[in-house]
Image (tube, rainbow, N blue to C red; front, side, top):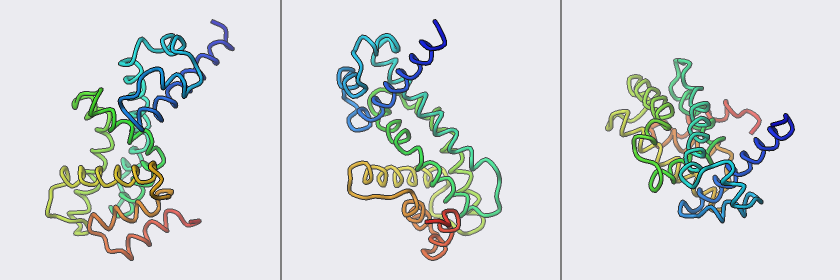
Length: 202
């Protein structure tokens, strides 16, 4: 395979994954025909890159998991301010929200809970760590332990992403991050100030 053909194959694979993310994100039951049409390729082309739907979904899941892992890595650096850490994490995850939402959507049909847990593990661990830190400092709710509180946060963010994707709302993550902080127990003024500090040009 020449360098040109290899680059073309990679570009086609990316186009297929992008189309699959859009189509399966809207409806996890969409078939390969719909994905091929959205990508502007034939079903045969899809089969040249993926052995079938299961392989395509696995490729999509791996891509989504890597995007979430990179985004959640921002929380790995310890900071004395858990409010800022959580706002930063939400803003960063929002930038890969399409992948995050698609991964959750696929979980209910194509991926087992163990696989989803492995893919979302870095983000969930980061959130739980930040929440535990904030609970110790008294800035987040303490009625729930960090694990369940983190799952509630995850559902909250997904609901906000769905609102954007369905056209009910427009947001670059600023309002979402502010809403998440408030939901976790941060006062509205501090929440808004923290997010504005991270997005000074907004």
